[in-house]
Length: 128
Image 1 (cartoon, one colour):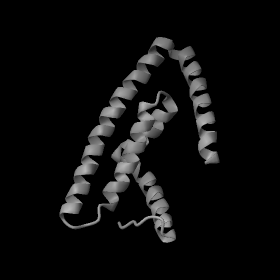
Image 2: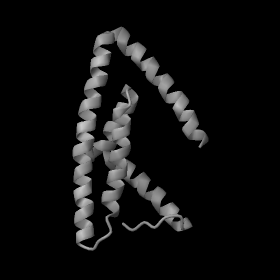
Image 3: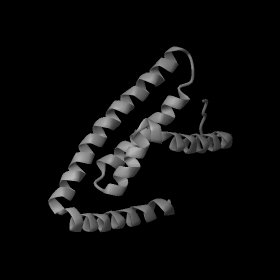
Image 4: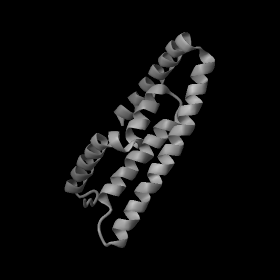
């Protein structure tokens, strides 16, 4: 919980600094335009990738297989979508990394390790 509170303080402060820096280079109108563009494009991409993960989870369930990988994909995509919806360049970079399939793999492995640790403690059940 302490890390979350710290993140809510540090990340917006860094984002404001990046806004000011980028505004000095490209101008404030372009900064606002970029924020709006990345927000719209990112949420559209997250929606498309999320629907794909949902279909893969349904297919796995219909084939009587655990949808573990698709669920982890969905978690990464959902988190990335939240980051993309939040205004800021740093959160947009993190969001795109979580949403794009070719950059999502390291985050998937971290999420799977986290889920396996929780499963080992008995707080959740996770099957790949």
